[in-house]
Image (cartoon, rainbow, N blue to C red; front, side):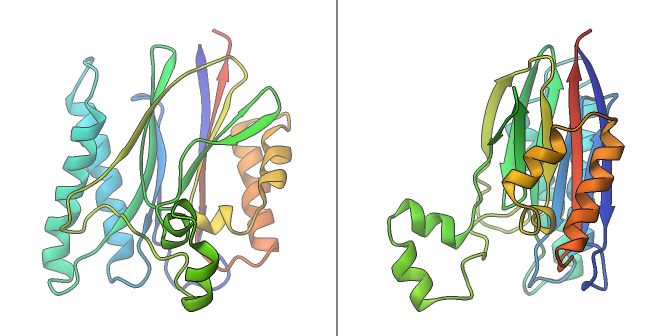
Length: 238
């Protein structure tokens, strides 16, 4: 199978800094996004550090199969150490959603509320779960009660890369199929563009860069209240 890919990021219409970092390394088969945690300083530094460390860790494995849990731990430690310099009192943090595409499979690693989606046979499916207070409340069947008491905290992260608590990474393994379209996106895209709109955009013909340009343009049209970053991988027949 062959992969076509592209990455695009935009500061949006409200933010004064882009704290997102795209991850698009076709030579390594490594793709994803990172989004610096709002409410903490050093968001841009955190996401950049995480992406840089992921690339270094996967590259260091050479032709071997990297341990994605260990790769994410390396990113976590690197961001923690940077946080001790940037913000000793609070530290820094970032989301990470990424996939390693090799040998007809993709192995996913995910922490935070950036997302990965798969469009297959015209159907869009989320393949990650947000690590937020709202999602935890829903899993515990208390979302209505919680959000009534805490209406502004639903999007608060319960996990991120770079904080001193032990890193809990969601890992998954998926077989690839010709025609698959894998999207990695920060919440500046997923909160602005509905799943139905994402499915329509991802189903369009054209090159990955063209599809992403239309996607980011729609996020901006819908308000552009946050940085918007997306990475698209299209799986073709060999």
